[in-house]
Length: 195
Ligand code: GDP
Image (cartoon, rainbow, N blue to C red; front, side):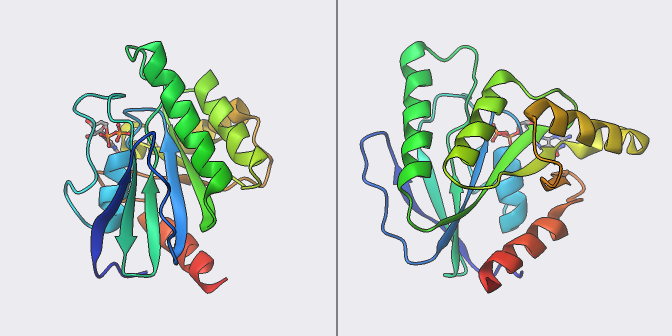
């Protein structure tokens, strides 16, 4: 996949209607600070189009990035920010669930997990929501450059087991620093576009 042009097209708040997009959507979810903006920026070849969370957990929006007029990257609000108040926490849950349930063009959902750590309870909840809406979560194990090469397989196994993921779940280790893993994500997107 070659990214030619990208733009933030729609920003949805808690009360906004979801856009009636005509191209397929792929969504990115994960705990705040997991590296979601960095991944989306890396895939789009942009330094800072996707917001990096200066105030993590505060921005409760779903952002739609138009990619080449052929698909959308959907940036879901980051969850699990410990200091967010209960109202905010309830809001992200509703927004994410509503999107997964109602988007007609959603074709794949990426779930980002920090490769260094065991998935949290929120990660497991997110994994189950994705499954329950009929999608097979694709795991991106972020911050790959922060572990030793010899530890990768062990950590991938830990992430899978922590999520109680099926054996055939795709896990793509990714580094926003080295862009390792980016080609695998592009290939996967190409496969979805050809389907
Ligand atoms: P978000 O809240 O999920 O959007 O996370 P960000 O993309 O804003 O990243 C959170 C922090 O982790 C920032 O300081 C990033 O620079 C850092 N970060 C994200 N991805 C990576 C990565 O692959 N490697 C390293 N070393 N740091 C990363």
